[in-house]
Image 1 (tube, rainbow, N blue to C red):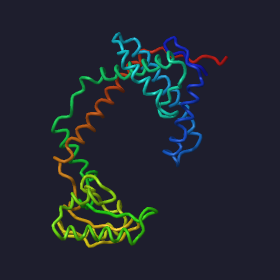
Image 2 (image 1 turned 45 degrees about the vertical axis):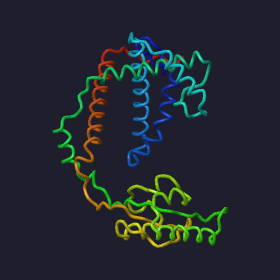
Image 3 (image 1 turned 120 degrees about the vertical axis):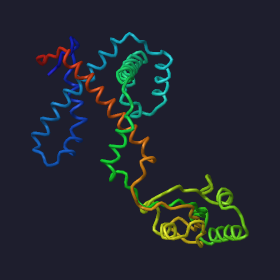
Image 4 (image 1 turned 30 degrees about the vertical axis):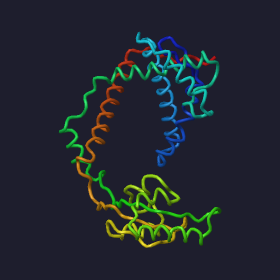
Amino acid sequence: MPILVNGELIDDSLVKEEARTIRPRLFEAMPNEDPADVEARVKQWSRENVIERVLLRQAALADPDPVDPATVEEWLSRIRSETPGQSGCIALGADDEVRRDLEARLKVDHLLEKVTAKTAKPANKEIAEHYRKNRDSFLTPELVHAAHIVKNIDENCDEATARAAIEAAEQELAAGADFAELADRLSDCPGRGGDLGFFPRGEMVDEFEAHAFTLPIGQLSPIFRSPFGFHILKVYARRPEGVRDLSDVREQIEQQLWQEKKQKTIEQFLDRLWAQAKIEDQPAS
């Protein structure tokens, strides 16, 4: 049924559309629950979500701070250039209609920024305590830092040609050529000197990992074949399996805890909007 939120009539179709969106996620998240109970949760949450968005929009539109017209036009231009489905579900109607929708969304974003502006970043003690209690979540597998030169075998290059090219690269390396320079000049994956960064087991093909995780640091592999073609590999460094140091994850933890604090602040703000709101179910017409 329609809902009256602070005097604004909200059509029941919005609640139904919200229910259609969240229903699959809830059933997936609650596979062992009675379907009737899940459906009841869908109806409750869809209604609450729609009302919450209306309350936020009403509060944002009541905020006297204006939205920069240039920002609205920038977003409008960006949306018009995107393909359908990429614009955050904004219905592309007349420009004036889209502008009003954009302005309301930007005012909501601005309001939430104001609400959370004074949220303090977590103290060092909070960060250290979170790290201590969640050390297992910072466990990393064995990692290897490697680079490679590759000559692909495909419709443009047969196996004999690729083999000859990788052997020529091997000869230049034996003569003292710089690996990174050679990778950028000769590899079929140029750029960054062939550097692949750190990676764990399971990200590369088996033939590649067989060399990457056994080759001594600083040494070159022999030429080897993978499903892609021929490679020469160089290992730069290794990191054993273990828990990452607090210094490595401090910024990550700080951002996570700070976002959690901001979210709590927003939830408290929404609770106040709910407490002050007048919400009435209306009979269906």
